[in-house]
Length: 328
Image 1 (cartoon, rainbow, N blue to C red):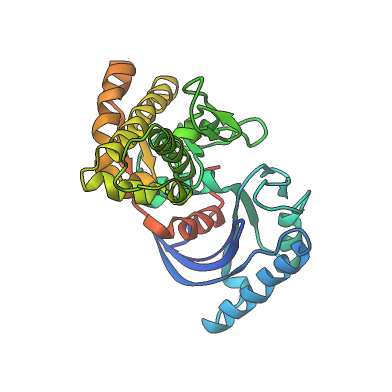
Image 2 (image 1 turned 90 degrees about the horizontal axis):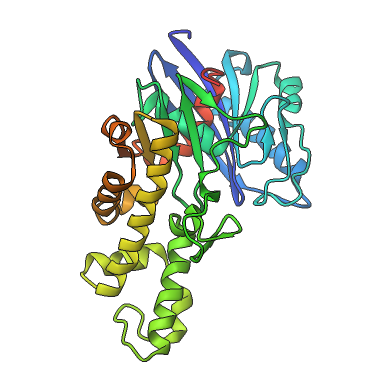
């Protein structure tokens, strides 16, 4: 890599998108600027793509840079997608984005290398290149946000599978019954995601209220639908026994799911973002105990489970990391 490379990142989400300008120097990156704008879905794919071009021009003008100085453009987007052909294939959070040939469009527009990578995989690359997994050969990154996705770094490069579907750990079923995640009851995502924790809490609290028990952090049935992973975490930190029990359940399921990945992939690091970062003290003690009970001892002994290091800006770093065109 050149000692000083300008990079453009395009982050495509269900509600908002962003153009990110960065500069990579040796083994680190500096985020120089970012422009975010709303995602237009069913009636606005073309308009959103045009927005990327307009905001790219705007961000370059702000920094008095020419497009020819860019090393490449990295696109991070939720799947399914085909990174080899550069096509977005109808992601569930991007209604109307069907067969979008996004790479060829921007390659023709700018004359630069353009790369498309699933957002969880892009985050894995960023945490491996610049974050908590820096320098390792085998790493699993897990999102643990609204949903649960994973990116796999195996033998020093991203493993995306036969058709970019590797790493869908959230679809693993951990129990016959439980909150629904990834369309499957009792799935890893059902227990270990922001939405899953909220659904688990709502079902548990509703059952308690129906039998006449008092729940301090949710005393009425009208408040059940307002429960979130964050509000339950706050109650658990305050010592509420019901909230603590909910997070203990999540932590045990997290340990079970991680044990499967440890046994199957034998990673050096499992890096976990979002909810795990924010609620580490609630989740990790029981998850660690469960791993000690469930995972192969030799595999568990060489695996460190750590919070993601890139924080709330991980999506920005992810798209810039894709722009390097390395490791996948």
